[in-house]
Length: 328
Image (cartoon, rainbow, N blue to C red; front, side):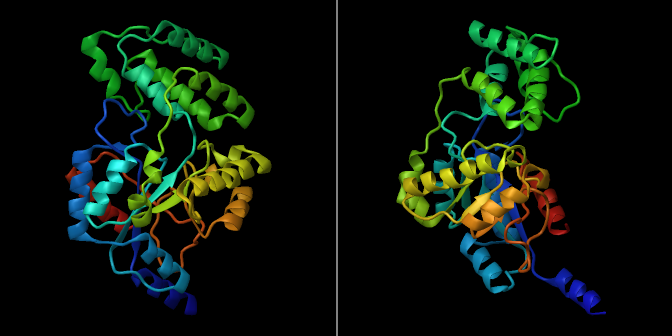
C-alpha cells in the first residue's frame, strides 16, 4: 500500500524536461542531425517561454540537493560538445534572460563526424589525397567500394539532405559515412585511435575555445565537462577513462579559472558508459547528465539525469515533441 501511495504521489510531482541541443547555426549538411538552425531555435525559445517555466541550472541543483519540487512544467536547456557557435548562443540566451549549461569537450581537432561531413557532403570534388585516404580506410576496414571523387552539381542537394538514419544510400559517399560512423561506435580504443588519426589527417582545422575566456558568458551560464575526445567510455579501460575524465577536467578548470562540477557522458546512452565511468564521475563531479529519454524530478539519480535530444524541428514539430516529452 505504501509503495502504491508513493508511486501515485510521484506521478503528481512537478516534472522537469531537460533539453539537449548541440550547435545552433545555419548549415549546409548535417548527416548526424544535431544542428538546429537559428530560425528554428528562436522559435523554440519563444514557445518554451510561453508554454513552460525555463529554469536555471542553479534552480535544478538546489531542487536536487534539498529534494524540493521545481515549478510545474519546468524546462532546462543544455548544449553538448563545445562548438564555436556557443558564443553566439550564449549571448542570445543572456538577452532572453535564460541561463543554460554548456558541456565542453576539449578535443583540439574537429570532431570526426564534422571532418567527414565537410569532405563528403560539402565538396562537389574531393581533393585527390583525401579521396585516396578515405578509400584506403574503407578497404582497411573490409568495405569493398570506393567513394565518388566528383558529384554532379545538380545532385548535391540529394547528397547533402541525407541522414545517417536513412535506409537508402543515394551515393557511395553516403554509404561511406554510414559505415565509418558505425565503426567509430563499435571499435575498441586502439583500433579507433588509428582510424581517428587517418580522419584527423584529412583536415587541418582546429577547434576554437576563445569564448570560454569571456567572463560575461561563464558568469551567467554554467560550464560542464564532456571529456577530451568524446569517446564511447564503455570501450575504454579504467585508466584511459581516468585520463579522459580527470585530466581534461583540470585543463578546462584552468581555462575558465573555476571549478567544474557538472559532467555529461559522451553520446550518453547507458551502453556508452559503465560502472568504471560512474565511479570516476562520482569522485570528481556533483551532477552528471546522460542522453536517454526521461523526466527529472526531485528524487532523480543525480549522476544519470536523462535528457531529450532536440533536432532541427520546425515549430509545429517542436511543440508536438515537447508535449510528448512531458507525458513521458
